[in-house]
Image 1 (spheres, one colour):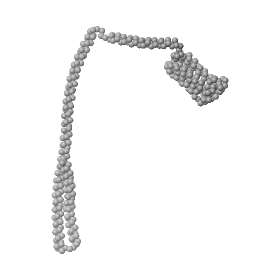
Image 2: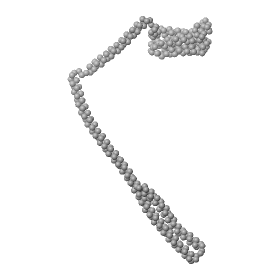
Image 3: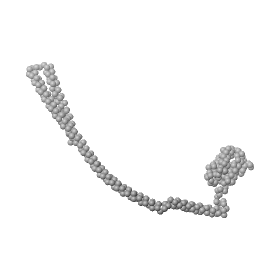
Image 4: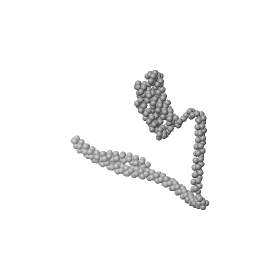
Length: 335
């Protein structure tokens, strides 16, 4: 439907809605305007006045036209403008006590719209039930005949298109038999060259397959060598670690022997010093030396002289114990 007609329908529906559903007119639905306001008012209520606008809106809605001719568009736009002005200026007076002033403008406007659309659109969209029976049957027969003519016309147009296409193909065919023979010879040459190329391609594919097989074989061999190398590298790594631990264990054993010798030496020195000090203390006692300070100082001197070898022997014992533990640990790891 045209946009201009849609605007007119919208304005008419809004006017009808306000007249039918406005609370200000609720008391007048059951009473006519003449009964309420006097003899110079129509014998209608506000709902009936709204139905006039709604009926006119339905009449305009039945006009199923997408494009309106240029000569009818200006008066239709003028009607839309008039409805807009009436809705915003005159319609509010229906509900504020001045309906006698606004009512004539309402009738004038609806009457003009009805006359305009009846004169210009009534015979463009006709309900079938409003036609005379004979005329309606003739229209149906004419419409059926027109449909058959249109279908046959489409078939004729397709046939003409097929003929034109066949003529164009005929014009494009070789004009002489020699052209056909030349084309056949060219096709044979192309076929022979294609056959040669296909044979060459088959050879290339076969050679490529052999290369792929050889590559896969070499890849398997390389993978096997990599696995063996990894295993050999692991074995060498284990052997090198074992040899390293074994060497450390031997070095500790050798150093432990040195500390044992040092321990024996320190014990021997301590024994010699102790024997020497014991001998002198015995001589002092035999010579009847009874001064306590002499005996105490000599005993202290004896203890200090023996303390060095004894401390060194204790240090050697600690080293021997530590190196023995480390040697046992390295020997276990080397195993």
